[in-house]
Picture 1 (tube, rainbow, N blue to C red):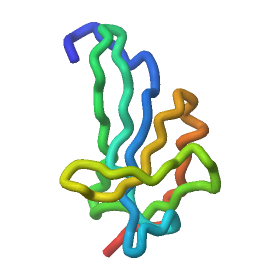
Picture 2: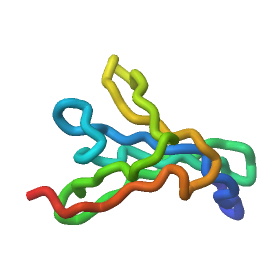
Picture 3: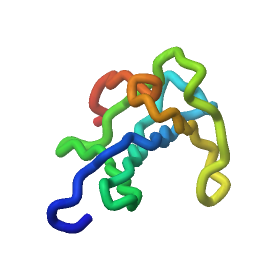
Picture 4: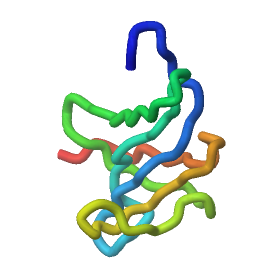
Length: 93
């Protein structure tokens, strides 16, 4: 992003499931936004003590898909951020 640019629109999110492709445990890989300039911006959550354990909320907006390197991921490409919600369970140690 260039100086003066801004995040304008939520575009979607990618969730990496834990074992067995369960929606109940995994982590949010990234959220994707469209900037005012029209460029896509991917933001990743970072926690100083390591990744958080997260679970997807009960919604039909998250769908199972094949990501990079044939990895199975859940995608949410609904433009309403509330539809791509998730729950932070606790820190993984």
